[in-house]
Length: 104
Image (cartoon, rainbow, N blue to C red; front, side, top):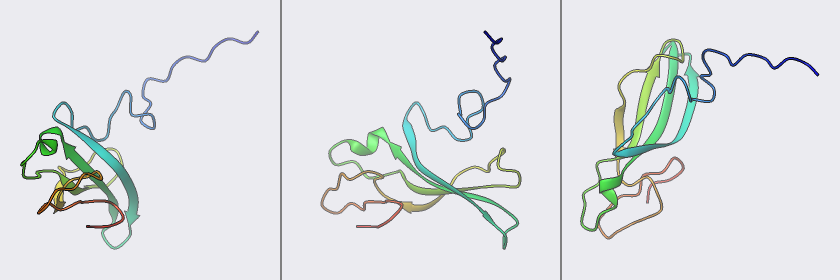
């Protein structure tokens, strides 16, 4: 039987040892999409943040669609709000639903 390989010191692709983005304990970061923007000369990550408090009856949404930027894909800027609204399919009268593929 072969010898087991040692666990790598960093496993950024699994996000266990070096999370790129975390919104806990008050929220979840959802639906991340990363692309290299040649015009900007850096990586752009677009994602949703769902604050748990936004799910309360009568709450005004504080989450939505955000963007972060990185020169190397490892160190990211502070998230910038693009669209405010709920990040999941729970809609209420007068509230926006912010999703990666539609606004409704």
